[in-house]
Image (cartoon, rainbow, N blue to C red; front, side):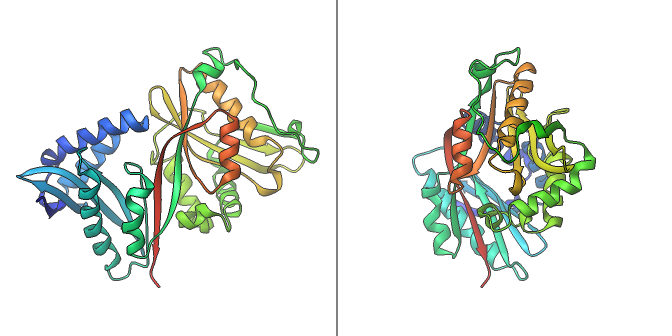
Length: 326
């Protein structure tokens, strides 16, 4: 029977075979180069700055999970077990230890996590038993090389929804500049008010949280490498209002990722979000990218339908789980 051991008893060298195995899974199954995360996790291990547990059998590490804190919020950052017939059972053993530790820490009133290595159904009963609410998330991808070609011309045009109230000619799409950050944070806070994604990630629940989210995506490489002049904003010409934002990163040489897209409520359903993505995909195809990925909450059905119209298909479902102290 494998043992559960405090991860701080190990250094990066001891965990490296496991990190390399996980990196291979990220590349093969999630279309993501995980090497930057491996370097960060290794550094935290060597500096004993990572809290969590390792699953150890006969001195061999077969899995690990770590967690950290931001003020009163705990975040379960990862859960990975070497592929095997008993992978889910062993992952649940690890998860039990992590949940019990994080939720019992004095001062922690909320815990969030998203764990893409496991199907929602694999982990949902364990989280529910500890008072967590679960939300199914879709990992989606669109093949832009097939649709646009290297010259950026679409093989088949994207159908834009029609609207009488805000014609697309009233909007200008331009690169996202740091001067847009404050207005973008205000837009995110407003758009995600009473939205399921604000339940999953409480950064959307305040302007300061949205500011930290933008900084992490655009300036701290928290979700892939920046693509020069890749992120975009849409400005409504008559009013000068920020109408929409689109963040883009590179997660491997042929794969771009959309960590954030949002359209201000008054400008929704007029096609500006679709137009932004269409323009971005043309540019990405010219740069040599072959595909674009994103994640979306399954219950956000309007967004799911939009992405499907643009050619996105779901290749993985996973769970987001949230706990709030009563």
